[in-house]
Length: 263
Length: 261
Image (cartoon, rainbow over all chains, first blue to last red; front, top):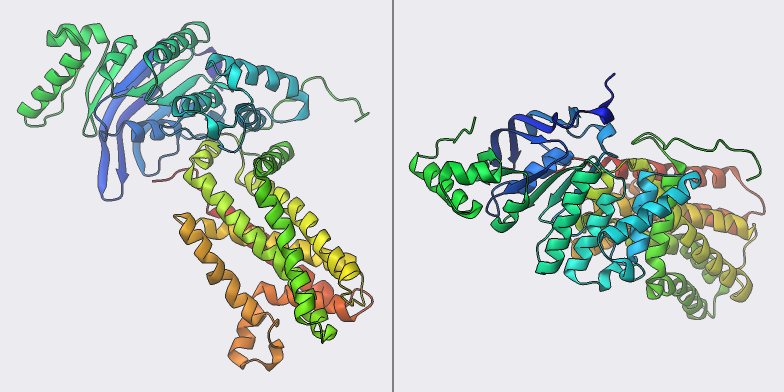
């Protein structure tokens, strides 16, 4: 058996081949091929409704009707062994509004690392996760009484609890003020650099793309580009990632919706 | 506590049944309720108030109060737990916490058992108060042991929790969840023998009442009411209610899907 924890960082954390997802009558993802490099921040960008959330749910293993190949941390997506190794934050904060911040985290920590013997370790992890998202002063407030941005940070703290190898974050910075957004992006970079965490972060705010190591640009269930921000700008001769994205969208439309391949 | 333990215990493998995950879930559900004291007060006080009311509705015929009171001691926990559980699980589904939990190493059985444990605890408190009030304050005349009344009440509560968990899978909103109450509970209420003895009903209805679990809950209560010791009929009734509860809990677990569209 392979020892996955000593996986070299250059090995992809996520590898997809001909990934297709059908939801009802609609094909949401159409035969995607992409990789997410380990230990880096990969941004998943595209207009709302383009399939970002579906792609993330497929990676986490909560999406039904997934076909094609999708390997996550060396195992097929949704494998039970992956449940402790992936942290997932949905777009809408999924926490218990009638529990305090600390009670929320205590519960999820007890699911990840159960038993009385690990109580001290859990307490440490909970305290660290609360500090990571800068909610120490609100630890004993009911989640339902917090602001929208604070609640989404509680949701993020839950995902950080298990020290996951892969963090999948669906629009984690929506509705946050610029200071908090900067702080969270600093946290993401710290996680990648110091804990070796792989991050897959979706956003439809293009200026956040500049902060990623790698970008997946999506549109209408297809991947327009899979590259670094610098290479994207250079290739399209654009000043910003936003301009590069628009350039690629226009090219895709004029090319009669032919799929743009980057490699 | 005093037995020596190894210093480190490896966490239970993902998805395997785990007692500590079950108790953690039960503790979390109770903690949520503790932030909502009004719900607790309503759950615990309403059955008592209803029994009190009933006692004086049948002021002139204490025998009627005996039969109806005993039946209601079994029916209240079922209805309350049904309502509370169906809403609580529906909230778990709509808030996204269920999806999050199922992406974690939590067994479906752990979650269901956690809910059953938490609401079962509340049901014990509710049933103990209602039974105590009926027997010692309102002079409900039971021949058998009040403990047996409590046992049936507890099994009924478990059945209510199970039914609530199960139907919440088919409710897309709180409106629908509440409407399942009349749909699932009322027919059982009409056919369980509370309003007319089951053997005097139209044969078709009698047959239907034979397959509804609440009938056996009420039969069990009436066994305790009229017999000093545990009769074979009582044991059968209790086992049927318990079996139904377990069956529906199993069905409820089957409605939890790790992958959803």
